[in-house]
Length: 311
Image 1: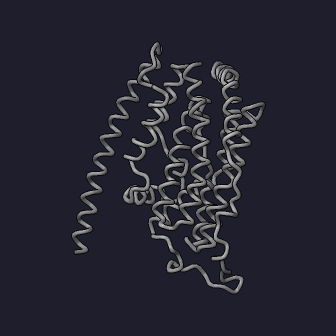
Image 2 (image 1 turned 180 degrees about the vertical axis):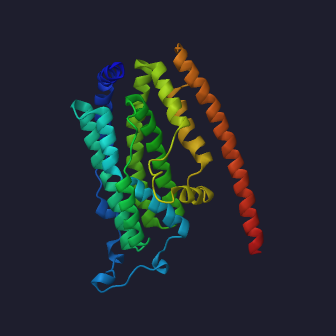
Image 3 (image 1 turned 135 degrees about the vertical axis):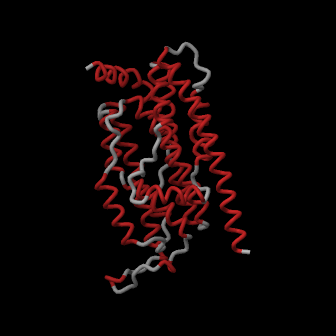
């Protein structure tokens, strides 16, 4: 019962910050129309309507770019599960509920405009894509009843990670239409990250020790929300080898910027729980950087071997 009461009190204490940041978000978010980012003139019928089935030769994307776009799209597809989880954590009342529904409405654009782009340009196999969508949505996403602070910490890192993943995928695709689309999507993700990041800042004022614990737990146990995608481990490895999203990017562009913004290593007056969490966080981040360096060195050696074979 205590944890339930703590969550209710925390939601109440943070609501003024929710109101402030919701107003800020609405002022900054620009209206955009997904249909304006899809090259409809490139579309043609598939076999059941008298056209042709998909063939890899039809795709202007490299195999790795196709993989990255599939992972990004399938991650976005699971929106119903994400909505359920944040509504469970935040509720549907007052400013919290207004944010949940606004966030969901904005996120809803991402999957269908990326899918439209891929289908119109014949970028990926539509049959395999649909089968994967069914698998992912049937599995769903489960935050395992994370309390409010853990949810806020997780979505801060996740939204920033998703932004970087979309942005880098757009660049890697070497298609200006794709890059324009994913840049637009990543702009949404960045605004969402700022909202959650600011709430974590407020939570550090309201409950510094428990919030530090939440941050440490979410950094140490972080997984992208698309981890249930069929073949995710193999696909994530391909994406990392291509430099679209790897350990160095995760450390340098996601974890470290947020920790610096929150000033986690400068906060004074933490209780024993907070100090222990901060020590664990510092150790993990140091090890993460070392792992990233080892991965980069291994990737460089692998690329050199492949280049040597081609000469």
